[in-house]
Amino acid sequence: MMGDDGLKLEIITSCEHWSRDQGCSLGLFGGVPEKDDCASCMSYVGPSRGLGDVVHSALGAVGIHALLKSTLVETQERNEKLAKEKKEQAPKKEGGCGCGRRRKALNKLLPTKGTN
Image (cartoon, rainbow, N blue to C red; front, side, top):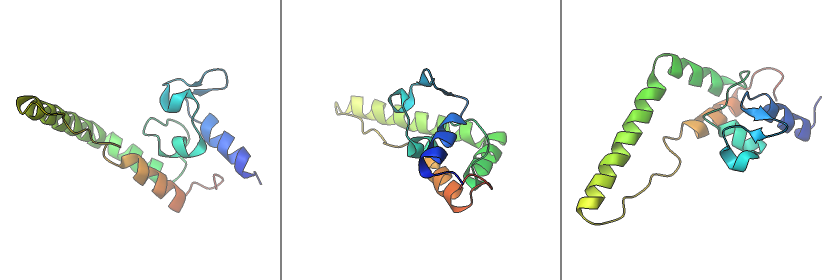
């Protein structure tokens, strides 16, 4: 049985964006992600960690991710345009759509055998 530190290293190093030399190749989380960062990262690519990864893959396969991303971008652009017209600062939505938090919660609720 692996301790928490071993599991943390396994989760981080199982992502294809991770290398021991450079950390996160996408530069996310300052290039040095923690276990919780990787657990909710929408850019994680690696072995399934649980139900959240299965749902993420299924929604990606049917195009939901692209639709959500374009909707969020369009909404932010519209907010910026309206704010510019009113000469105000456009509100920035923090945290995107919440998919990463849901993915993390589902992975924790129903992990893949051997990852808990």
